[in-house]
Length: 159
Image 1 (tube, rainbow, N blue to C red):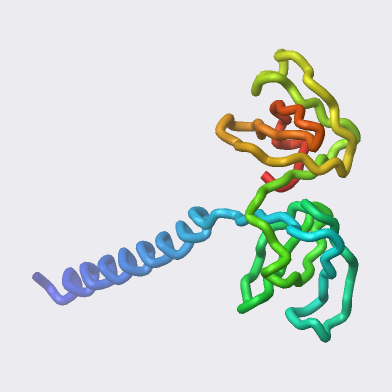
Image 2 (cartoon, rainbow, N blue to C red):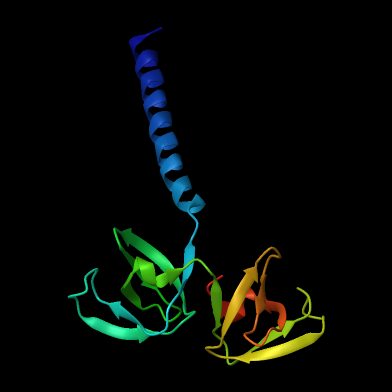
């Protein structure tokens, strides 16, 4: 094997290693799952930093769905349906999932089919319990009055 051929082979191996590393790096971002929680208590204070001494931004209500962005010891940086980023004490979060209606009026159907019977409608900012999202494009939800049904995923946030 000539020196030129050996150099080409060495370069191809190095490029292959780099491409594999980059591929693995980006695949971990794709595989990462978004974690949703809800506010577990009534009137939970949301802060601008992970400290009780930080500025208080607003008070969140029971069942408000939030997306975990960063976990730091006893604190979680969360995003709400409006895109607000705040810090909340981890103990104030529940793994019970909820979604919030993001359109003026969401249609909740009997099954995950736009042509199925309309069970009820929910106004914007209504919080619904998330039951599952096994059907692509749909989320099974329950209203606080007990009614259940399926809503299009693009009509709610938190799924």
